[in-house]
Image (tube, rainbow, N blue to C red; front, side):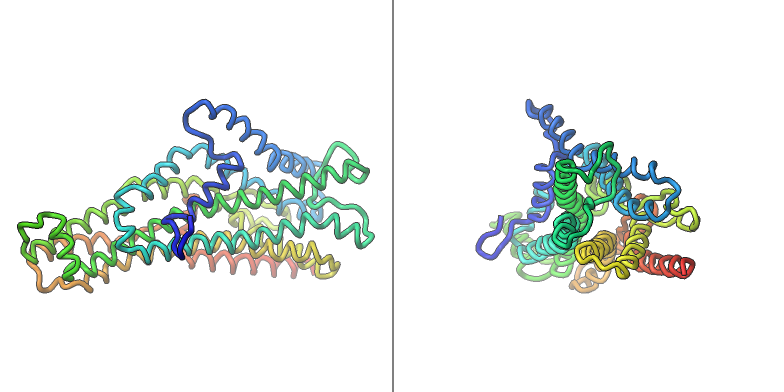
Length: 419
């Protein structure tokens, strides 16, 4: 909910979860509506991904050996296969994800909502910003693809479906062409919204962890100021004021408990497990028989190489709708990698900043007990939080740059060998 220039904490998670719910992949845990919703899930999955996957797999089998046709279909086939795996993970890990969402809204994480409202709003807007940019790239791409049959009709070109696929009927005849093209156009648009919502739900949970680390950093820095001491004093006993140093130590204990909630709680453990199970990056077989070095390349990187190749062909045969769609699709795939690597890198940096935050407090004028407690927190902060994708590689900006360099290098090698 957005009102009076503010925004509800974790609103970015609600946006993603609402899309996931209405598209049939967030069934009720219990209740009489669970079975009807699961039937809706099956119908939704069949309409959005099932038919497209079947036609694309059949197209691969029918054109096995023709590398030009295989290259054209493999890009979207890998996208839809990855999307389908995300749906399976989302349904299988729903209870774990719900626990993460409940923890994000629990009193342990929300008790600082009023005190650090500006910080929480800032991170919520960051989550919405990433969702909007990601959705914009994907939305433009699928709209251009869905518009392809209309553009072909206006230009007088032969009938062509928005996406390559094999169907057991003549797709160029009326009304089969119109029905198939309409289904593909609607399905890829809905799939785009669901795919983006699934990814931003994952990245949004990392944003919550970053926000809590930023709050913890502020609490450590302001551990000895008069406002915090006064607030802690009122919480304990209004009639019996505590000494300043004792209050500072109690504030440190509160920070230590908050730190344990972030570092050692089920939130981070389940978040790491959920991301480890998700198909952000994965190993698969080579999509080209003449390039065996692609066997160990992550799916997203391989997809970018294939998109580069397709764009190179479209530059020679200029089709505006398809060219714009492939360009924005390449941006979407690049942003899909970037959004996870950036959030993983932010989580690492936020956890490392806790070490310097300890030096920013008035630690030198406190008791030895306070200094020992602060030192223990600093030692824990020296082991930063990191997340890995599919237990294959760390989520960091260094990983993102490695994937980009690898994609460009392989693309140039393929173009050189083709010449």
